[in-house]
Length: 207
Length: 207
DNA sequence: TGTATTCAATACATACCTGTATCGTAAGGT
DNA sequence: ACCTTACGATACAGGTATGTATTGAATACA
Image (cartoon, rainbow over all chains, first blue to last red; front, side, top):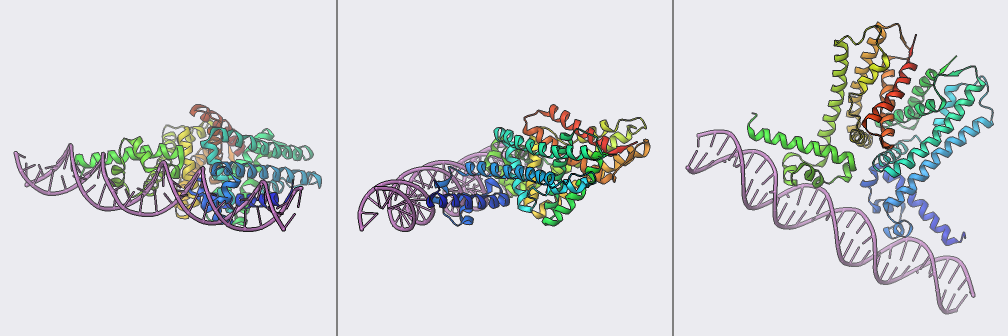
């Protein structure tokens, strides 16, 4: 079924999705005209409507894939760290958490796109439910590694692992958003949010 | 200069701002037509354009007043608690923080409006700078009371007060947003976010 | 009471965006 | 080599939003 035609079609879809991610991040879903997305992708509206039903449908697809990518990125990181034995007794919990959190796209556009998705989740009940499900998956993945870290170290968790994970995610989000507002670039974002996260991690753990 | 005419004008402005707050919260700034705002306020577009230059200008005014109200609400609470001697040695830090945080509007629409303001701050540099200034004021106010609490109690703060305040604000925001997504009403929002905040407070303090 | 001014309503011109319907073209199958 | 099909471009119709210009009414003031 992978005829050149379908390959080309998939390519078109991918380019449209890519362009949409940028445009939606910059001006929001409502602010983005279908034509603006097509322009950036190098197509006209004909290509758009032959690949997607509407702007909303494209957004749903995009949001789903972004969320999935984030979840997978976190899971992969977790697995990777676990595989390479990064959870030895002497490991630095602060650094570990940073490595996991870096898995999410934390560039300026990524932050803006996530915010757009978030506000849509806030307005649309059904979409919001799906969003929360995905987020809970991420929380679980993070909770797993937290539990593992704790189990091999001499440290103890002061709150349930899930709760610690939730706090970490929320702080991470809050810091990156504020960093992006202040005009920080990707590296600065990573740095400042990492700093705050480190402090939280230390609070969450006890000898 | 408070002639009946100006009083009526101020009233119109207030009603328009009020309506705009609702509509913007529900469907966002872009999704809200000027007419939709006017309809809700019981006016036509004539009234609108005779009171505001554009939708954007109204949004700026609204965002400014919302932010100011939040900052003042927090400051008032802080002063109020300090005045009534709520900072005695035996006070419950968890409850105190909850009382402060409740000062912000934490109903569903309030959360959505704040999110809309936040995303605008993310897209517009200048607006974002102003937003961050206001937020820092809130952080300072909260930091003050945290410092006071600590000074009269036998407790100790594990991170700088400003940082603790920032974490509290971010967690509060994150929890209320997620609560609103899950369809919680105001009381549930207060309850669940308060719970998480309490745990964070306990982490931030040490004997 | 008459006049002037201010505020809100109405009407209108313009721009834009969406979605559909039609057309041309290039690739795949036989 | 021909035919068919799928994909993307173009053209068009309908709807909606914005902002301005004009009109009407109510209020203050002389």
